Image (cartoon, rainbow, N blue to C red):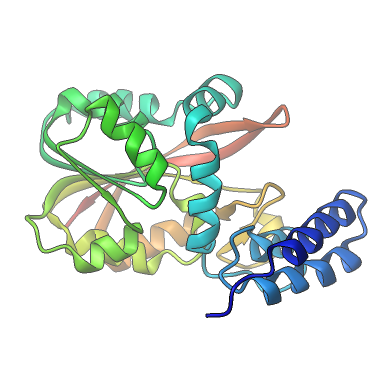
Length: 270
């Protein structure tokens, strides 16, 4: 693969951002197209930015290069920014719901998109054995330092689920993973293959008012993350062999002072 012209890439990306912020979306789209030409792996997330402006096709997922770059850049301040600044409390909400449902012990926990270990920390006393998976190496390093997991892997969640040959799990969590995926079938099918009968699958999603989807199952919202319709999530869960136990309304986080709404799904493998 040819080396990236970093200077040209930075110029095109910065130009695209400035045009986007000025509301000149047509010109911004041309600049982002140049970004993608210079960097086909899309470290800067040009594809989701185009989709968030309603230009270009909605990708099936955010690129691995973008997700890795995004979270490695923020690893050192991730916990503070996400929890204190953005009000992200999904792992604690999940813990409370599991307790209320009477699920307080698991033999094997798999935490997909584990990040720095927020969900691992919330569920640490519930699992005899915990495995964490994340694309961002720096995030995994921080999780390792916390000592929350018995095993950690730097890997894409879907790739891990496809390749894993270890024993299946009776609890699989994926908090704040769906916002970086559009199409859900690969993830849900992979989870099913790695779950014992009766295993729980718990995850959060972001959503938007139904009319904004215009009939689509998912879309990229204003903050470059994927939102999914609850009906689509339920349909894919059923297709993968899961019964949806609940889909509670939650405020996932705040962004620029605005609440980001979504759901906490808890499902059981049939």
